Structure formats: structure tokens, C-alpha cells
Length: 459
Image (cartoon, rainbow, N blue to C red; front, side):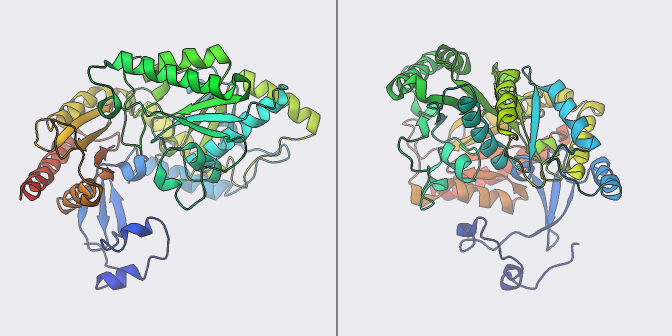
């Protein structure tokens, strides 16, 4: 049993001084995780949980991969830190950049390294603006995203996101005149399609709305469109049929850059190395993080194609430098762990495993579709969600104050299963190494939580 940190909830709470997710603290005592192995984690009281969210969508290889730990230890013993400013570099960052360019879903020219998905997307914004200044189109500053999207919590990244909770009382999106961050409708067919509207028709309507937005703003002012292949924190929203094909046709028509936010989808989650491959996205800029190191160390990357890189390089030559970077960009330890992560994916045939087990995962999710409070089940690869509804026939959601999704997540926790409530959508994103037996265990725990939720809700 794990050594406890304290003898009561107040004792445990004294160890926590972070404001992260502070709103949840009054409702439940903090869950202090002290150990992980495989797809499981253990709290400070010794309770063991099946981690069906890979932490925050990132622990793709589970919580005890010895190869990654060893790679980090070797790197710490060899070169614990160096920077990538002023024509400096290190072997690990160079090797990792080469490896990522070889894996990219579309031809890419260069890689910029940061520490988180938020920083990667923030950097992508700056690159987009820098690029358009470099090519003599300084009016192109507007970036279009989708409602319910999540792109991070730095000022620019949160402004791109479309989640109200990341905007309220933070004075976001950034208030400028004219506005630089715009939002179009969310591609959630189940919730937002008109009666009788097929997925293809819904996608056409959203593409038309995007075009109308570009025309209304003036194509000469619109710089880029950013999208997650599968919208993660917005509720695990899989794009409707034809969506990215139709959207990209609009972007090409008006010369708008395509940014693929692969922070959640990258490195096997959808059954391909990148979600862009799964959904036919041809990005000009691609951001990735999380599973790049299986979450073991903070690292993210931004890949840019030759068109973007050439303009940035030429402009930087004129100015004397590219005035952007972080102290820990290309950190040698982080890059070494990321390189080893990519080698594990290859050596252990992780993509093949995902493709083999994904049908069972998706079938297990969809087995809940007949439950009385389940309105919609969706997913791809090893990511999915169950959306709860007060009246599934009428597609009427639960009242917000009911907090149905959060109650379900609490019941799942009592069954030793960690899931994530995003409103009333229950997200699942297990480590890519999950076995069939562990998958059966996951769904058995989920079924027990659903049984209890059914009984509570009927009462």
C-alpha cells in the first residue's frame, strides 16, 4: 500500500497549493496520485485506478515505461541542459526534428520546439502573423477557430479556443480592433444538425458558413484556420463526413493557412500517426505535444511547411534574427525522451496494436447506446465519448445545475475508473498499450458506474 501523505482530507489538502482546477476542490477532496504502473495509477491511500484518460490525453505508453525512464536518466547524465539560441543546438534536438519531419502527414520543412501544447499553438499564432508580414500582406491577421475548440490556455491560444470557461473573467479573447480571433460553428452533428440533415449536408453548411465569415471579414484580412482533427476537451467530437474536405477547399480558395492542432490526436491516437492522415488534412502548420513524450517530460513541437519556413527565414535574415524562442526549447533531456518514445512506438508496433484493438474499444463504447440516459456515443481509434441526455428521444440535455457528467465521473472513480466529464460528455482516452483483458475491465467498471447512474437518475 502507498504511504499516505496525511490522515484526513484536511491533511491531504495542505500539500496542495496550486490554483489548477480550484473550482473542483469544494465539492470533492483532492485525489493525490503517488504511483503509476502500466495503465493504472495509485493514490496516497493505496487505492488503484484504471486511468482511462491517459492522465490528460497524454500517457500513451502508460505510467511505467522503463525505456523512457532510462532515456531520461542517460540524457541527464550526459547533457542535462542546453539552449537552442544563437546558433547553438544539441544532438537530441537535431535527431528529433529529423524524425518528426519524416513522420509528418504532409511535407514539412522545419520544426520549432516548445514545452506544451499551449506554447506550441501560441507560437503558431506568432508565426502566422510573422509570415504574413514577411510576404507583404500585413492585413492578414485574423485567425478562425471553432466554438467548443480547445487550443491551450496561454493568452493567444485561449483566445483561439472556443470554450467559455477559458474566456470568462480572463478578458479573453483578446480585445483588439478589429478582432483577431473569430469563431465559427462547432461541427457536432448530433447536437447542431438541422432535422433530417445528413453529415455531408451539415458539413456543407459549415463550410459555407466559414466562407461567408471570410467574405464578411474580407479575405485579405484572414490569415489562418485552426482545428483539432478530433475536438478533445470540447467533448471528443469526431468531424462529420466530408467536413475537412469541404473546409479545406474554402481555405485554398482564399489563400488561408491551415493549422492542424494535433496535441491530442498525434502519435497513434486515431489509428494513424497523426489525426490529419485519418481525416485527410493537409496542414501548412502542425502543432503536437502530449504523446510526443508519452507525457513523461514537457515537450511540444510546431512543424511548418516550406512556404511558411522560406518566408520566415527570408524575413529573419532581413531583421537579423527570428525573435522568438523559449529557454527550454529543444531541451536535450526532453528531446531524448521524445526520441525514445517514437522508437518505442515503432519497436513495439503501437500503431498496429491500436488498429487491432480499436474496433473492440469502439464496440464497447457503443454497447452503452441503449442505456436510458445515453444520447450519443462517438469515437475513433482509442478515443471516444458517451454523451448523457435527460431525454434522449428529444435530445434534451440535463439541466446545467444537475452536473450529470461530473456525477457520473465521480461514480466511475468510486469504481476505480478515471474518466473525464466535459459537461455531460464522458471522455475516454486510455493508454495506447491497453490490452483486450484490460479493455474488458475498463468497460466492466464503466458499466457498474452506469448502473449506479441509472438508478440515481431514475430515483
